[in-house]
Amino acid sequence: MSGGRTHLAAALRWTGSADGPGRAAVLGAMLGTGGPAALAAVAGDLGPGMAAALGGLMIGGVPVGDGAAAQVRAILGRLVPAVAATITVAVLARDGGWADAVLVALAGGAALVGGISRPLAAATTRFVLFLIIAAALPGTDPGRSGVTLLILAGAVWASVVALVVGVVSRSLSARSTDGGPEPAAIRPSRWQLLRRWLHTLRHPGGWQYALRLAGCLAAAGLLDRLWPGHHLSWIGLTVALLIERPVERYPVRLTQRALGTALGVVAAGAWLLWHPPGWAVVAGVVLLAGIRPWASAGNYLLYSAAMTPLVIAILDAGGPTAPGVLVDRMLATLAGTALVLAANRLALRYLPTLGT
Image (tube, rainbow, N blue to C red; front, side, top):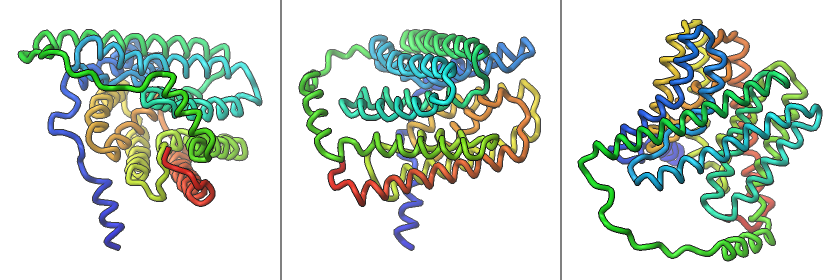
């Protein structure tokens, strides 16, 4: 019992600094994600604006305090995987029955390649996440092409907003960020990273993350095929949010994300069942977009609770949500969580070499 209380206390603990990501980063996230939605609301059609808001969501929350060069690198680190995921889904939409299998293979391959270095791990994780989100968008070709362009336009918009907000923030700051060059950290060369990665592939531990991710996504796709029309694509999104590279039987972050996702599904369902007007939906998107980077810096439960309704609002384009959809998404969240837990247990039991 005490172990359960300790685990729950760790899940609820705020671990970020008091300053959080900074007001400039929060403002950039709000404008980058909420701006397209606001323009669409003014035009009287939320659909295109929400597609562009998805592109903004892919970029939002870029830190702005480390200088222009660091900010550009951070933006590119988010923009490139987002663009790659969006274009990939647009291409796969033209393929019928093999699209799901190719998506699973791409996600597993990206997870495997991400083991080369930490930057690649972050980039491939974003690629997989937005691959699943973009695939969950309604519509097929030729309508998918227009949605793809809107997503890419939203990503570019958010990148420009982040740059402008960063420049203004640094120019107004009384503190100089140029306090002299920091000592250069000793980093392994690309060849050293590649050689170390190839060495890990000789052992099961080097494959465990890719196998767990691909296996869970394959199971999610199968369930979606067996029970069509029940919004079970949310299982894949839950898996992409919950699964992590290190294998733990009951990781705290899994508990945080599972509880946060469940709370977010309930909150979004209650909100959208009210059938809010367009301006209220946009206000909610802007608010959640601002909470997201702040919560990400301190508590994954709060982050997931904000991220989930934000994604739901964007995917549903602010439209009405039936009670059955809320139930389906809650069940899908539980199913995705169960898949991740099962994959972790199997990995710990059958793969003797872990921790890579």
